[in-house]
Image 1: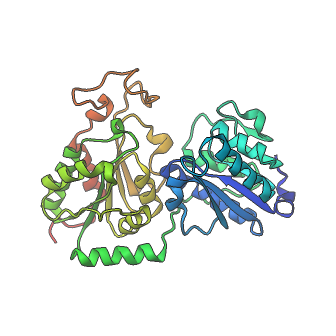
Image 2: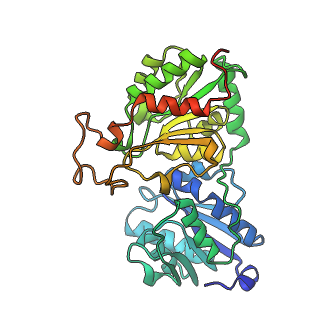
Image 3: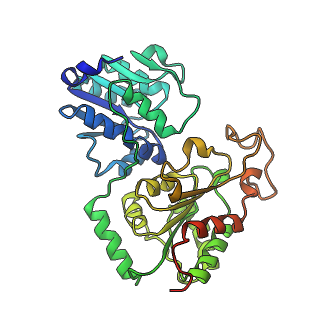
Length: 359
């Protein structure tokens, strides 16, 4: 372990291998803040895969960003070696490995980084100088804090953060004006997507909830999603009515988050936008099926979120769909299938308790 008394003077360059999922990138934000505070003079470089870069833009917790383009410039062993050589030339003093894979430890070792700290996972303990036992309980955000605590960082501040660029914020205001969404309107965000289809609640049920909020609160629903979610968003809009606003084509993660900042509530699955909303302190109603809210639920104040889930005896499962459980007739896991629209609507009403039903 690093000696906390010596850490600031001896560590000049730090490499952080960030996670491969948007939600995890948001969940490491308290740990990143602690690193920046513990090593104020150090040069902090992030190594991140292409698809999470947008989630990192605007953050004050790092100085440089190296893209790990696994499908392009860093494809194959020749591409991997090119990346390793670049890391080696940087002469980092410390590697903090939030990503738990064997490859992350291998890259840090082959880059000759003298201090390598991360969890003893994926059979990589021998590649690390400071292999930490993999936590068996607690939220993932707390797990990541254990890594930086091991190098002497103060982890008292556990708030999530998500940083928006000025360009994204300006774009969000233009979007709202263009669609005539005035400041007094109750804005409800809906994100029906998930990392895997069996983790995604039915679009029809999202639509039923949205329609009820339009009817009871005169809410303006704003839909968020990528190309894979287009069919579901179209179904939601059909049920919710013409006041439901679709996202612009090619909307970036920063642009989506900037719009989300203007919303009074997000309804979503267990997904990256759920964690972004928690970081922005936007109230969240999250539908969980196979996942574990205790591990990956919104890391926020209890009054700012509701999780609607079924605590089956097999929860949380290993999500090997469907080798360990049978699907419902709809093709969804039973733990997700049994979450009803009325339950989610009631959770929304709890969080919207301060809003009148007439506007």
